[in-house]
Figure: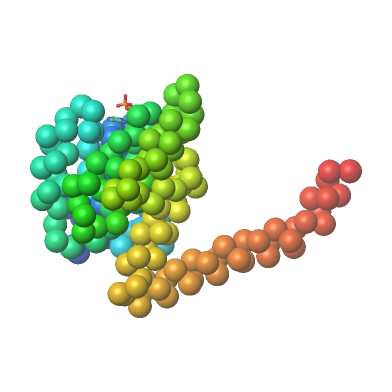
Length: 183
Ligand code: AIR
């Protein structure tokens, strides 16, 4: 499904530059943080796809072998035994893969983190933090990779960083009140 700043599916415009994929639609609320950061903060259209290497491996291979040529970066999220990003890194020697471990189940994402980070030599996955921060950082990291060739994305990255700085400045402005409230 194509998602762009203009909308979703038939309402979307442009060609996808990033694939955002995940093992189950139960990962979608987490990965919407990556999708929304890509499209709303950076104006980057993406393809969103479910791919489960443990439930339907053959479809994963077909999807990943047949990505549109416009896709330049892949973000892959899974929970538990999270082999999706590593398997994609093997399938696509030509594209960078960013992994997002989902905070799920008894091990709360540590299992997914270790599944993604301990890749054998030759199958690199850039692994982000577990959960929400990881999903947003995956989008920022993908935008940085695209910005190497696209100055417009570089400008949007700088504007985004500026917004974050302003948030800290605002926190300093309200600090005195908050300190009084703690007394
Ligand atoms: N998963 C699905 N296929 C392979 C894996 N690792 C993961 C999903 C999700 C978790 O299993 O990425 O995080 C639970 O999926 P579900 O569909 O049971 O909610």
